Length: 278
Image (cartoon, rainbow, N blue to C red):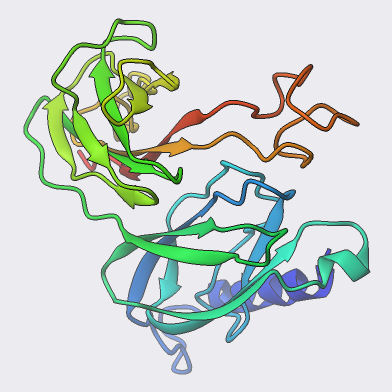
């Protein structure tokens, strides 16, 4: 792993923390954007992501993110930022391999997802930049949308549980490949997303949304389908590529005999776009 890079990052952040408000050398806070990383690279192992143009106001601890894993939104300095993706490994020769080297421009006061897509085997890795700007919600409402990471269009149904039978109309219809649906505003309460191929009644994958624990006195509410003001992006990921660590059991060349720790089937994962503020 690139230990020296992350030690440098820690030292830089510590220096910021040490500067008091009265320090005449304090440069202040620059224009910021919020950025989340999601790994949709289905044919390789975990990855690390680093902003290499500066230490301050860059990603912190985007390390060892496996397929389908994602970070929280982190504050970064807005503007054009130089980003690299590396394989996560204890082997220095592997860990120094650059999977993706690119520059992306972020607008201040905007939240984004950086979705890593493509194929490591075909050397077609790329970032898809997605704005995470959910609509306003009412007193007993949440917002959600579906993001389709697969190469074929899908329909998505919002149901009470992950086993509730689906029925038209779909909540999101014909969501294109590697694209989001529009946000919809729905009542709070138990909720799941069930996904089918576009125009099909056969469910490919389902997952219930997380419920929020009751806040303690004086505590802000947590994000959840039962917590008004929450917003979600619900990602639909394809199965891992056979023969890679994202799919089959150790030593296998197909998904036969795969363990629950790997993804030989399409998967639905809920990500929080907005946490309630009151």
